[in-house]
Length: 41
Image (cartoon, rainbow, N blue to C red; front, side, top):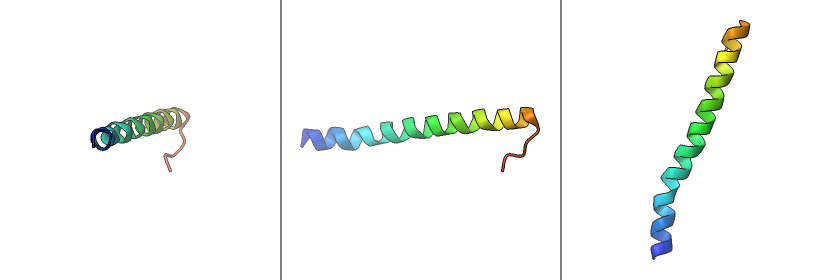
């Protein structure tokens, strides 16, 4: 039961970490594209 509780509580941390890295990469790419005059899409 404890393992299940830890598993359930760990998911939001994992999801937040993945979302943070994706957002960071997206912002980095957007800035680089803006600097080079390329469209975002």
